Length: 302
Image (cartoon, rainbow, N blue to C red; front, top):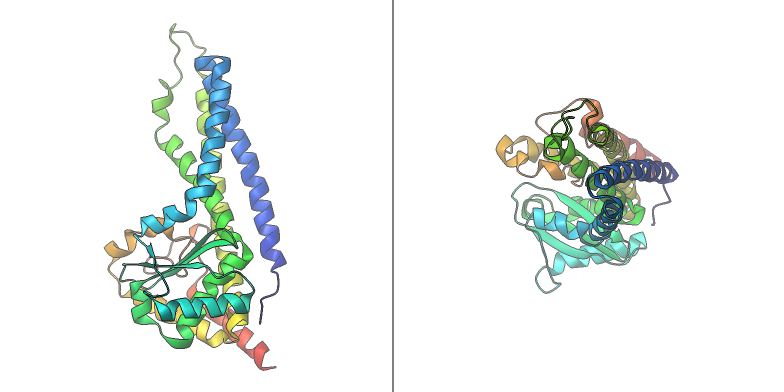
């Protein structure tokens, strides 16, 4: 069975992309103001050119960047025949091209998907996940990641995360861009572009961060439902979430922090032991996900 389009998720993604496009424009605009002030008209072309190159590189290499962050390697069918067979079968049931398969050496059980499109996707799992889950629960997790590919939300998260990262770097290191407002002549004119740049960066950082959290939470619900529809077994998805969450609770905090920056991609965040304020969480509470899946199981039985 193929999952139906999730129009609520699509609307959220479109709104997020529109908002992030506006933030991108403001971010690049103020950067161009700074570059023009420092380099003249050549500064404008420099900033626009660099921004274009960065966006192109982000689109091309963002999926591989997530894999490299976890030391995940693509595996062949000969190396992992069962895993490939499961992914291929579930992708066919979901109506998407079969993604590449990757395995990361981490002991904590987790999984994620990266994609530039449905034809260029990777489903990655940790060795810990393969050691922890089997049968229907493993299928449910793989179907969850394939649902992310079908919904096309991995690319949106990549765009949002990129801007948040760059904006955070500017806010944290803004003093590199000038002397805090003084000018070379010792006057009071200062550098208004510096403060505008920092202000826009702060807005982009906070706005992008909140947008990524809001999308991430909803996309997890959508992928949970997608996995349930693909496999026809909502209870297996609920059991997998409970199993992974329990394993996370037994994992040392230090090990969880090692890859916490990728939480938005994981099926269960690597911060299960320390819940942050609701607005900053990348995922909905596991209990709420299980509750929704339980209700969905009832719908399947009707």
